[in-house]
Image 1 (tube, rainbow, N blue to C red):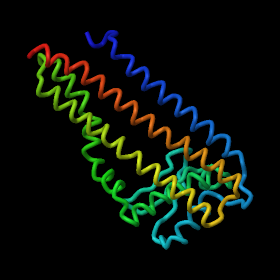
Image 2 (tube, rainbow, N blue to C red; image 1 turned 120 degrees about the vertical axis):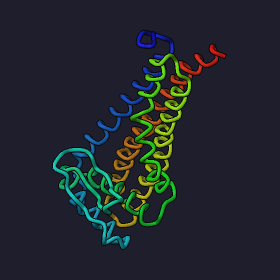
Image 3 (cartoon, helix red, strand yellow; image 1 turned 180 degrees about the vertical axis):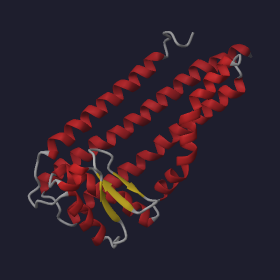
Image 4 (cartoon, rainbow, N blue to C red; image 1 turned 180 degrees about the horizontal axis):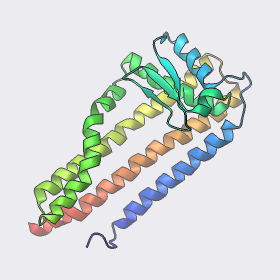
Length: 232
């Protein structure tokens, strides 16, 4: 019966709308400022190298991805990976994104605790996101096995926890990015304002993902916690 409409679906819809709104915001900001050439003609790759060198992180490599999107810092290999556009283009967006990923590299180098905690959560969060819902479904199929259902909910909760821990990591990386951009004079005053808009919009996608995950967890608790109460 849970494949049909029930009032808790409103939580799923709210989560979807939040994510769609955040996605539209970041796409708009990045698209707008990717068309704004910074006055210094600095590409994302050049900005990243300047920040890393000035921070003494000569061992951190910078790689160009052969596709758009997917910018990230890989702590396992000490590598900042930038999308093709952000690596090569001298835009405000490119510098902002590159600086953000360097912010993660700086976090890693300084042993930033939330980043370490998030990294430690990755294995269990992956398990939770993959097995949480299947365990709940299996519990229902096996005649409302409350043990399996509760394990599934707790597993999903670990994935939600990962989303929450991600928030301070991402906000801190953006704050470091803006600080380093200003410190090393990578962008002008007005360009930095545009960069802040890009990074704020990007941060909102993580907020939206966390909010959506919380709403989904709440829905699971409402649906299957109610069954436990009826059994009692």
